[in-house]
Amino acid sequence: MAMGRGSAVAVVLVLCLLLPFEMVDAANFPVGGSNGWTFNVVGWPKGKRFKAGDVLAFNYNPSYHNVVAVDKGGYDGCKTPRGAKVFTTGKDQIKLKKGANYFICNFTGHCESGMKIAVTAA
Image (cartoon, rainbow, N blue to C red; front, side, top):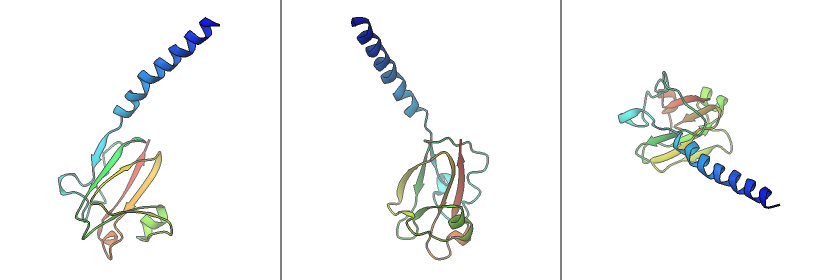
């Protein structure tokens, strides 16, 4: 019986050691680089490698822009689907999910002017 409890304690200790390393593995990407979230960022993801759990940092003036997490249809058509999450702080930190992630600015004409990104996270 004591041996069983010892094994359980060892498993818990190993898990405690491994969990923080998973969090450290996530990268933070400032969208648009030093220009921030602005017009013509549509090509910004090109050449970058993203993983699920990485964080996109959207920096912008909230008086002029926002960030909306959309689906592919919303991205392609520059439309905000019903129930889409809208971010408005100007310093939004968004964790990527595995697969396709789409973001637009839904202020009039902004998405159409290239203020949108599509990011695929492995």
